[in-house]
Image (cartoon, rainbow, N blue to C red):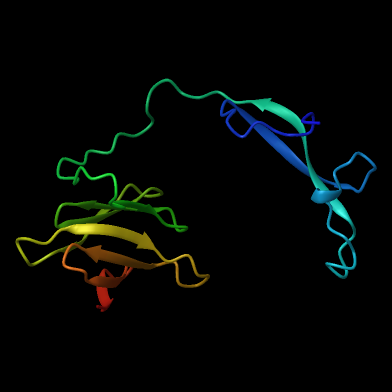
Length: 153
């Protein structure tokens, strides 16, 4: 039955997930078998406990973004693994270091009819300081977010 299924739409609780040993509870589809994954003991994931969390009723920080382009399909905000938030405002990209609170200007596009359509930090280990910036003129620029310089177009 559905007794072991966790409701994915229940947003007001956090769950602790633990790795358990295989049991005879009909959860065979959740088990990793030794012959499929050599060296790993058969195990499964199960929800063990609900933990209530407090959601603040007021914001901790407010992002002032007066020139943000109002288009659902654009990706104008990206948070890096190094705790830096990139925000595209029309023709400009700004970087906010959440650790220090410092704000830096990364770029302003040169063409009057161009604007930023996407920003995305690299997630590869050792490369997380690179950020890609896509534009309406179908260009992709790659910047070093630490040195604040373009490395590729």
